[in-house]
Image (cartoon, rainbow, N blue to C red; front, top):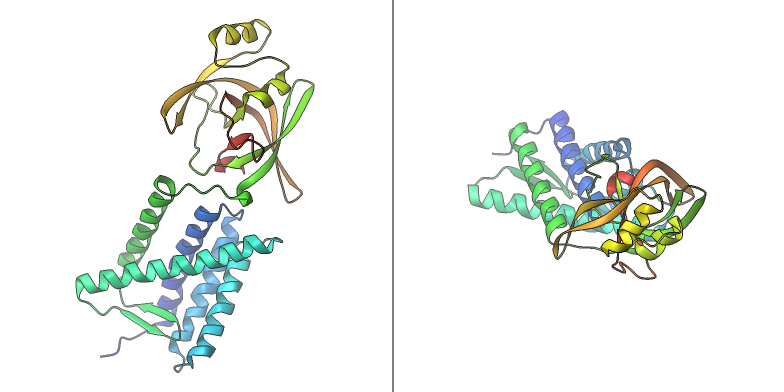
Length: 284
């Protein structure tokens, strides 16, 4: 018996699934976007799912339509002038879709059900709305867990220019967007930039190293230092930190200024010539 397909339910459920797929792409690429763009892309994906109601298309025509729509969705959600970034988002959108479909087919196999209908490359889930949303959110949660705990991407597309100011001095450096960095200053609740000692010393004109005597000397010279706990691969460590006046995050000729940023100074080289600082997602 063929399932009865309701157009409004079809659009809504596929929009929800598309939204979570786009969130997955954002997590893996670090692409800069807004909630409005993600919702718009998800809505287009939901409307496209109406193609499941059309007569069966030839495979080649279906593939062309599916590709064109996927490109449109990623363009709406992650509009960028950089072709490399757009192709990265497109490929990951497809990959996330295949992964999600594989999980849903596995669930269907385990439940020995037939709640999935595929037509013209679009999918209809004959499931309770709440059940589908829960399963979709669960799959997204698993992907997010793997992203944060297993995968550690270091893409050039995630490197920003950063300009820090302290008093009358300003310095520029390269900063890597570390999606696993959620450090906030436990004393001020300010976002934290992890900066190499070499750049920090150019900014403050003081030597700020991990040696206790050096920290005391820097404090005597007017820098209000504190030790911040930071989680590293080797475990938790304490880094000397001070408050910069401003941090400007620069990307694609756009600037975002953040006032009173905590700067934690590390003796590690980080990315050497590629980047000299680490920033969290909330800063971009």
